[in-house]
Length: 219
Image (cartoon, rainbow, N blue to C red; front, side, top):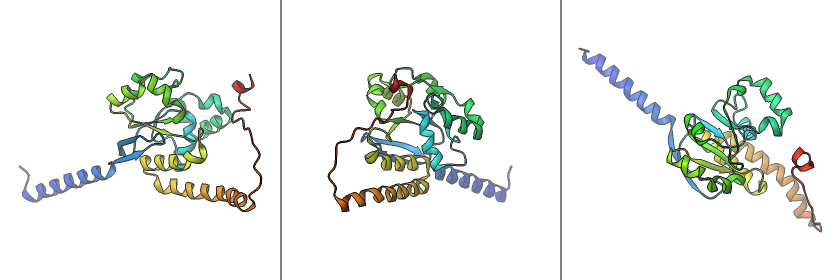
């Protein structure tokens, strides 16, 4: 039988461990860019990227090891941006072992494969929301306790980039890095908007093709 001093030490160790574990994961509620309230434990330790190029965002927040918490990602990075994918692969060769997925929009996402990876959260671009709901991916993942969080850097970048970075910073416990990026982004944007506001020029209609150089848009 353990002596009283040893019991006190053991009991104190268990309490310290329990307190530490509690501090590591706190329940938070965020509102994603689709206006949905999502509750989850943060920081998220296991993340699925609904688009491979979302790694750029994690790279801003965790530049030394942006793949540390990525357990799966959509197989689009190497196809849409092969040059940067090659650079990432050279720096982080372990990315070849990360499981890849099809897309939500084309119906090739595998819910069973995702569930097997035991993710804490799936980051999804807002443009995939309609397809996600049509295929009931959101309901299926919710039944498994896996939340989808919508972010957006493409559909409405001026409106959604800053809240999206703030959301990712919250769920990854990288709020300081997220706010540093937001401060920089707002300062750079002000360099344009302040000048335009002061000059108040006549504003022409402008058409911008966001994917003018991609093979699909050129075809």
